[in-house]
Image 1: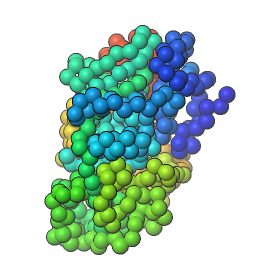
Image 2 (image 1 turned 90 degrees about the vertical axis):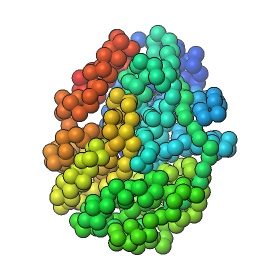
Image 3 (image 1 turned 60 degrees about the horizontal axis):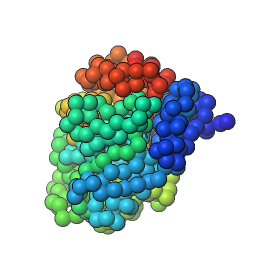
Length: 415
Ligand SMILES: Cc1cc2nc3c(=O)[nH]c(=O)nc-3n(C[C@H](O)[C@H](O)[C@H](O)COP(=O)(O)OP(=O)(O)OC[C@H]3O[C@@H](n4cnc5c(N)ncnc54)[C@H](O)[C@@H]3O)c2cc1C
């Protein structure tokens, strides 16, 4: 039986079989079967993190449930997609603080890899998790924020069991207005980096690196009622306001993108760049991303800028975002606020993998890779850059002593 491919089409899953349990009871039956197991989300990762030689467990047929557990918390099914969750929360007058660039990804899959959006004051999606329920061959276990192992169990790469539900922080629903500013000058952006990323609740810098002097676009998503846009800074950066709807890849058709031009709308229809009903991003693409501590951001961007001639021919677009610090052991923003340097590549994997070592060599040695994207960093280097790696390895050995959830990706990492 063919299980098919990941979203990008660059990975054909090697699993022997796929299970689609429709209830917790059916799931426990799957977990009781012999052989390696691996939870699968909405297949949006670009590497083999979600693959196995045994049974893939896809939760998309489980009921998508949202339950209010406190004035500021909801419990949601792990297999639910963020886009559906956003619609449900908005109906209840509730909201999340953050969103990734696309609403198509599953909650458990996104949380497990440290997926993030942008915002100086907002953490990755995993930071909204206040409790997580993991199911394994020996039953279910719920860990709450503050419990000893909790900080290791949220961004956990699918290694600790099947995340059947998570409890998330929510707040009253709010509106966001999104504006695009074209052509910011790199020298001014780097000189004013802290002010530029504070222009709104959520800011992204897009560049195809065809021009070393100017980035393509600055996207600003601002909560309605918050401080007005800093016009003086936008002028100093040399931007001009976009007068038409834009795609992150300048010039690409923009109908897949959430409304811009300052039109206010609910948070879940503005924080993601892409709309649920459309193909996000470019479709035919690969992605890599490295998160550097904020103090190293200017150095990292200058290093990329110096490689522009080698990067641009393979690149669809580079996006720079900010993520607040957290205490989740495997989070790329563990311990320090981070800046994400994300690359959307043309779908030429050999060429991308040949270029990545050159990028990794010039980035500061504090750069941590995104778990769900392509990287060629040596495992020992990844461990060194994550101070809690050994704690996570010990937790994994305790929670999955038989290694039922291990796969080739985790073994390469040294688990
Ligand atoms: C077009 C596009 C845009 C993207 N934009 C962003 C972005 O803005 N920010 C960002 O940070 N990343 C982004 N990504 C990367 C993406 O968010 C991550 O790869 C994410 O992990 C995908 O979630 P998924 O549901 O597809 O999980 P999968 O790719 O299916 O799985 C990822 C991992 O989660 C585990 N997992 C899945 N479900 C469960 C479960 N129920 N229990 C336990 N573990 C589970 C899997 O075992 C695997 O280890 C983007 C990807 C694409 C394709």
